[in-house]
Length: 292
Image 1 (cartoon, rainbow, N blue to C red):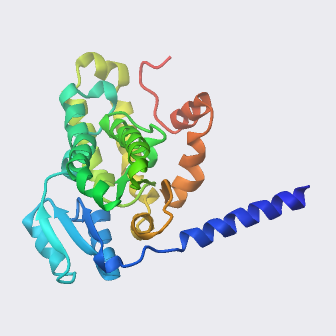
Image 2: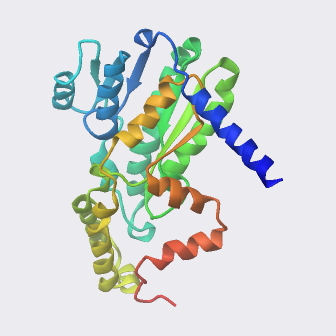
Image 3: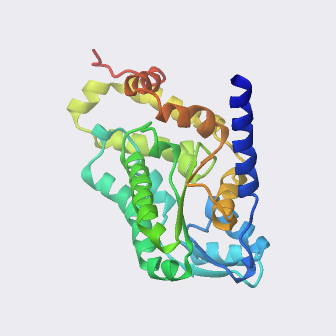
């Protein structure tokens, strides 16, 4: 019985491997819009797809970023200035929920969720006519809420928006994929930026909140943030390779887990009982001064 089961599993993965190796034909005739191309994942993906021969329209936040990207790519790539993914705004709205205000959440959601939705909706008529694809970048924090603030909320929103979009557009031959990276070394995971955000949120918190958490809690939190960089993967191509596959494969996946931490830690955690995930996440965090 176990032998038959092993054979079936082996055949399943062999068939899946074969299907995922099939690439869309005439890639040089395909157009791709990528947002956030000044740096990070967007910048690397733009260069990667340009090398594959696709016609890339790279949306950058600044003219300087656009000029630098044009200097590293072919004449096929075109740039446009579009303020959709300001990583500075994302990193500046980090903190515990009780330390933040409504405007902090609004800022994060405007940049990280509503901006994505706005751009996607504006291009849907063209995508539908072309039977094209939508590839949205979520995060492992769209599966497991590891911190307070609007970041996890925005990523859960990306997941929900992408799932509903995929089901609606499947009738028109449009495919929607979600990329769920683990922790990678980008501006968003920069310890100095995150630490500054935590400190600013603490400085604005009420005396009651400060008394409940205590200075020691802040100090230990900042120390944990300082060690974040050691946990981050430096090879951004692990993410952009998933994006490229989602755009060019004949049979793309619905979800891609990028990075070993995503595959071996956070993806399994998302299927665990809630009480166990709560215990695992709280175990590694400092306790507030007034904790029970």
